[in-house]
Picture 1 (tube, each protein chain N blue to C red):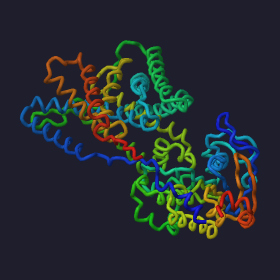
Picture 2: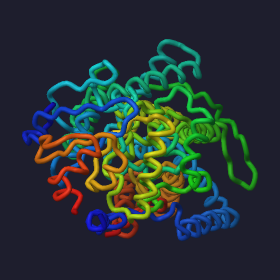
Picture 3: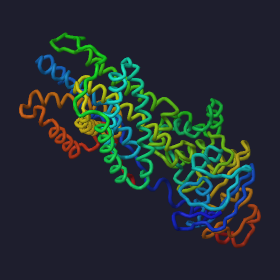
Picture 4: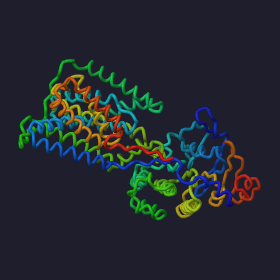
Length: 226
Length: 342
């Protein structure tokens, strides 16, 4: 697929495969087009050409239709509904489910127990890490088939980032949620992912299993820093 | 490994955050309590004052729902809908047509008018506003002014310029006459109908899934799309609801204030609603209601006690108040001043 903002082509001839139940990471430096990969899938403000197939169907149409097909996108900036309460944020996550049951909330609270006592708090007043967790919880409320995560580590302290990555791993392992994660922090992402793509100026420079990439000299030097 | 962690986390916590000042600041509460006490005391001392206050209260109620309609659109699109008043006039004519010309019983006609208004409001959004919405705010403002002229033209084209007379659903018998202050059933009816419809909208917006979706679409369209909220549809529904509130305002204003239906029915009322919504703080429907009641009373008192204002200078007086608010309290009574944290 290709993608452009207006006349500016950002992605050229990208081909990604995401297998059911796996965690796939897209690595790359600033401006490599990582965020655009996710925006292209969700059709957010990009002109896209090419094919995106999702469970045997073509993924196209407006952003909201794609979301309704089971693609939960946590955008950069976390997409918090700041003026709304924490609980309303969760409800919005389940906006497309026919009837979000009590067990949906209970299932989410298992992973994010702190939400229970903060449910009436205005979401905009949460800390950055809490907002990131709320964004994950919100996305998970939709019982998505695939979650698209845009730099969950951005702007967070290492200890909080570690916590968030542990939860992402649990969501994948316990719930079987497929995850496509875009990350600048290659170390963390490769620990989590089964398979990864390295993006350089709008094209895929390399791909392989996490072990392969961790062992690759060039990746180690450019992205892992050792 | 440590180096990689360090590069990723040098920028800690939100770089730019927005914090909002809590609703109904203390000053506002004290101010409103003071105003209420002053009005009650004044009414006890002078019967004329009391009667003038009640007249103002009813007058304010008649444009409260239009003010709320303006606020709903303002929250969703960031502009005042200049056509809101003409839309209300048009739907009042529809009410006239169904009720007086076609002899449908009053409240059935009222319900049919509300249904028409909803479709009409949604239609206006989908056909005129949505296509230009993403261009710029100025484009939306121009479109709503164009819509104002268009609807005005259509009303004058279909209906005669002479005043029309509608039946009032409420009797003008005195409902309450204690303490020398007379209130008739028409006043009570206007109050209940308007506040009732505004309250229903409040319940819809705050306690239903549809309302949650509409608020999300208005405040955060981007993230709303990502969770599957059909933003355009929600905004169209919002315009429909605003048109319903406008229709309530038009019909009630005709019944208790204007007494005749002309194509200019709502032109002054639109301005009064602007002022009311501004007093309330633009973004708060509750503020718009309080602002309307307050402004209705101010207008009535000014007319009674400031000799030269009379009926002719009402509009300049309203503009003067608008100017004062913009200069000294731009966020109104219930507005949230946005504080940028950098």
